[in-house]
Image 1 (tube, rainbow, N blue to C red):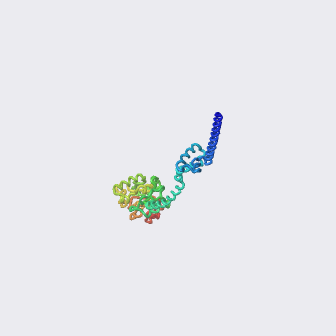
Image 2 (tube, one colour; image 1 turned 90 degrees about the vertical axis):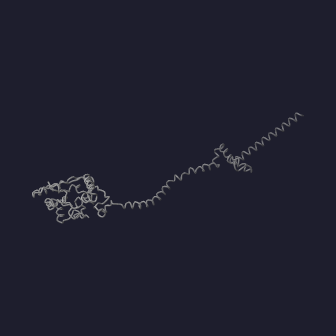
Length: 323
């Protein structure tokens, strides 16, 4: 009887254990299913039952769930983290250079409108304007700041070189063969009258004129030198058509006012036009020619023009209508 009782008690205990295990497995299964129904969020599942904390656990549970279920992190709040990382990526305000560039021209446009106003006074210093030569010469007749041209000025077929119409620095034609032939013809005729003429200075290069002009400036100053010596690029001698005439053996009258008072000087003044030469700087015409009277300086222009200028008693500037 005792054995039967023991056997029955064991049998009952085995049944109880089995039932307990079944209930436990059912409960566990229900818990797992419940958690699964809450997207495997334990905190959410506990909250649905009415238990569990809503503060710190979510962070811990999310971390554990992230480690266990990487696929389910997408629907969770972790995507909000990359979205929060987008702000650093939102350095695109810097990449938004196109709009910034659009704004820059807009601000530069008013600046450009301001800058033209500033250069305006600077440009008012224009002595370079070609319209000013006849209106803005200095006391000596030169236009300060005037640039030498690329080509010489020819008016009505006549090459002009004076204080308002300079020559190119590189202009170097040498002595005119036509002018030399005309002078030799004139000198031959003068010799018949007992006058032995010579051309002691004809063509001068730009560089030679630099040396000559500086010598006169050092001696008499700029203002005085400008009355009788041309600045480099402004000399008629650079054209090869200007002849300084004197008499052989009378060098003391070369480049002297007194040459015009000699027999030779008077003869040349009265006859030079017949050979195409004009007295370039007559008495009383300094305000027109820019230079004081030079009785020895003659310019070759051709017989026809020379005759008209001589008979009208005018200068080359007046003949060409220059002021």
